[in-house]
Length: 256
Image 1 (cartoon, rainbow, N blue to C red):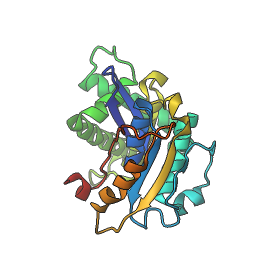
Image 2 (cartoon, rainbow, N blue to C red; image 1 turned 180 degrees about the horizontal axis):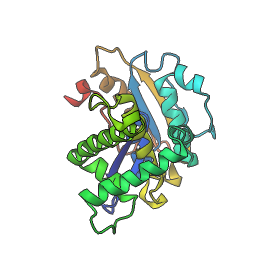
Image 3 (cartoon, helix red, strand yellow; image 1 turned 30 degrees about the vertical axis):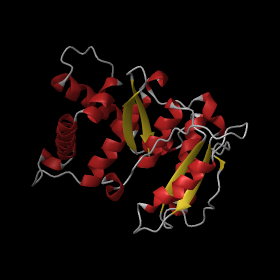
């Protein structure tokens, strides 16, 4: 799980969580603009069985088994995550919360307070929920945090060994990642609802479709998109102005 932030029209910083980069972009758009349709372009590997026609996005589907999450397409996972966004649920939090025992969670929260007290909050006046902002906005501090977390875990593990001594300064990356995942979701859960993206009521009826393009012809999405825009009409059957929001996800597209 990754965490993103963006400013709304009032310059307030809002946050969201996402399994996929495109998910964060869609959540931002759904919370900021009236959206009629989301069009996703990608290779056949991303959504091999999807039909190229629009379908209602929000269908009150709140659960997906771990097996289905592993075998389904990225496009299906995107739709599933956006449906959770609309229903204001996050099923994945339960799995993330179980990464640490209750004792480990208490010790980790204490570590969080000590780290931020020493680096950015010596007076102890900032809310715990503000710590997520620092980790997202300040790459240097985030790197320092990971190093401190690694060192803290090393000391904690060393103290559990007879004599309190180990041969080298090393904490397995998988252990560090497990704690980092729990910490980020913990801080995200501490955010007020007003600090998170929330879909506009107007977007309840948004449609979504997937258009497959050859993997080596990344720019062909433009030729696929233009006819769709020309065919759009208002409810009265009259052509109207289209507001288009584009999110480019990979290196080839970012070079356009």
